[in-house]
View 1 (cartoon, rainbow, N blue to C red):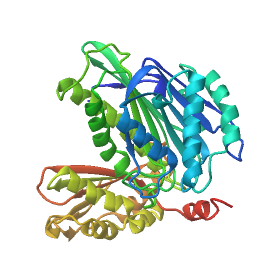
View 2: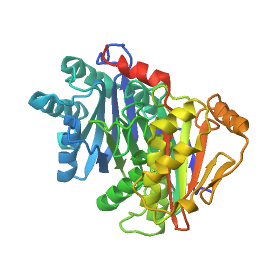
View 3: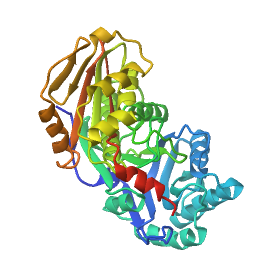
Length: 413
């Protein structure tokens, strides 16, 4: 049993946060496109960003800010233009955006973090942003998380949000999060944005370590299409408004907080994978018996990212051979005579030997997932054991449908 409970409120569930989302005219669609998350006090800040060599201006900006100062009060996110591969002017646009929101909030510009999402190669529509900033500040609310979640999405079909609460030193502590992402999703971060708020008191170094580990076990363990983006950003704030004692070293309280942070990130990551462009179901791969967790995750990510596995799931074809092939090319040594593969409850391979199973029933299992409740019964479970090691790892992905090609073929046209 998890030592926390799910609550409502997203990023405004923790104490001391407000959020807003408005339509500023950045998206051609006229949908909401400017979001703001604001902490009433200075908050410890941590971030994990894209590993791509081609990075958006907001990524470079946030990295510089967090290297110089491990705290922040505001996160401003625009949707519609990625502001990536936009040269020096894109950098100046980022600086102007931070300064403008800082002045509107009456805080130092060093306390502002930025995120952007949209089409690569397009600068932010600064006239629209400038006119939108007073409106988004005026819209800040302790119940504004849903509006913010709606303003950061692009090709997403649904918003992604979660909030959890636990007890530390007999006081409630909350973590909330919102995210966006649907395509250009692959481990080492992806075209995804995620913003997490927390009301605990945590040392900057420990908070960054917790976030990095949580990212590895969540956002770095999902894949939709094998493409890493220019804008990936995971930013987490911890403002201390729970009034609990400061967590400054590893111990029971830190372990509990990191576990809840990981659960928040995993929920958001699973939601992104399920909302993969054109997807009809979520794929969850669990690998056991590896030498260590990292090895298990590598095998799981390779299976979840295999185009052949993803295509078979979409075709409702219980083709376990593709799973075995993907596991074998993951770059992790194991003895194939130890390999076991299950699809749901169907055992298909044991000790490296194929087994007879009900193919029609296994196909029906895949069909049922495609028509079941979102993020509940719509998950296809693939279980793989590779030996007797203690390493366990998970990865998430989605099936590969005809619509993925259609959506991305028409992305800018």
